[in-house]
Image (cartoon, rainbow, N blue to C red):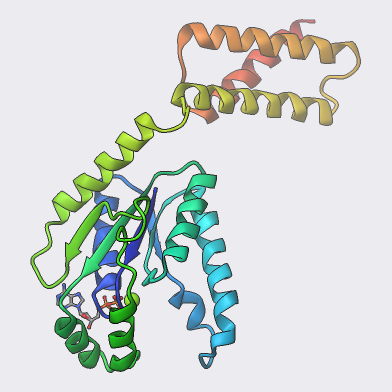
Length: 249
Ligand code: ADP
Ligand code: MG
């Protein structure tokens, strides 16, 4: 799942992201927080012409992490074009996404920014505040799933519940994603890998290649009738199955 945070500088995104990350982990979701500051801070100074690279590198990090983990995007995501890019990254990976809009009264944001040492000048925040495309205002696809007032008490249990429910709802109504089929696809791949390995190592050659392919189909049939185990177990079961039958010949 891709969790897209939206909010002005100093509204409390990074603080929220770290807490959310831990709460999600405790609920069994492997996740990490990625934001463009990670790349931005690799430069000794800031220049506007670095921003193109910073954006692309951040997208790359998010995209590759999404293959394995849930990702919390800790950025202002101030422009709706950014939000759209991020949603497209999630869609391409067939992952659910959720938009969380963090807000607080302007004076709270400016006060926090001063306390933090005004890394971003207050005038800039003021300017951003004026021009800010509130998510969901202009387009419906952009509507936040959760709005968090960071100057109030935050109910993380409720936030996490909403995230997990939303994810599973989208999952159910989403595009044809059949978890059973996904598992079988992986079983198919594992057994093909074993066959490939035997052929490459010359354990089977010539006529026996046909035999091993037939044995693979038999093994899959047998597996279907007795149900699935973990993939690594299946890999070693399949090897044992092959050894027994290939050695008999
Ligand atoms: P952002 O990542 O949006 O720029 P941070 O999370 O870094 O914002 O927070 C900015 C400042 O505000 C930090 O000094 C932080 O300690 C403080 N802060 C963040 N969230 C809260 C909160 N919920 N209540 C009070 N102070 C907060
Ligand atoms: Mg931050």
